[in-house]
Image (cartoon, rainbow, N blue to C red; front, side, top):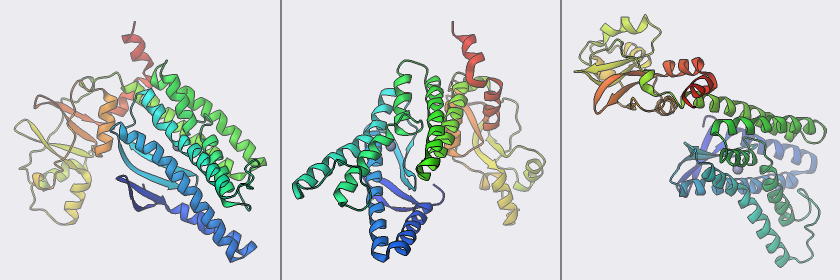
Length: 364
Ligand SMILES: [Zn+2]
């Protein structure tokens, strides 16, 4: 989301453009207009804008299918290497994931088909048989751009669309994180292939290769982390012996406490109920604004997720990350049982790497 700006909304989905995308357009304009004149510069930039319009439609393919499953789309982001639909919490249902993913390339194939028909109607002499992206007829160029976009995206290089489809198909038969690991391995191999081929033919492929490789690595890591935490209930990790702060305490009394510990956030508890989180940054801010008269309750954060003791650690971790808190209450039927911290959750994933030890122990 950083380094991007909003350009509008369509079907309720915000569209954002990354600043580097504008740099790319400026670069294309500069190169083309210095080499071939201002008219060529304008034409090249317009062509790229049209291609990215097709990329945008591809992303709408993903986003609208996701929306039909009731998922929230944070935004569609356009980058120089393509688009990204930022879907909040992708479902762990392989069939749905495959449907969402395949919708993108299908949009490009439909656009290619449409351009072919329109081209034939407007000018029957147009030749679609040879690949052409520059010069020649705009409709033919756009036809090929869409055909290649569709084909390129179904290459099974996870985390590209084709790789996600592959992961979904493996996940229909195997464990989800195992499927991610396999798809990521295929993705990394193909990424190396892209980079090697890119050196000889097209530097663009090198960029894509680097993007695919790092994407595959980080997604495989995230999958391993969540699988190791997906079978441990929060109950086993929650902290029951912890220091609390009362909302009525003067804020200055806790400054000492908060500055002499590595703990960043403190639970604010009143009458056995978790009422807020005093974050280190709010303490520093209050000090900065000389709010020495304030009480803890005045500056504590009062919005936070409540974690259930039977909730799996992976879900708790993702909810806490979404809400940007490092500590949350563990409650059952309104009774505070303990607290859970991000630190504790991550620590547990180190103790049980990849979930093997736990899983093998619990499954017969
Ligand atoms: Zn896609």
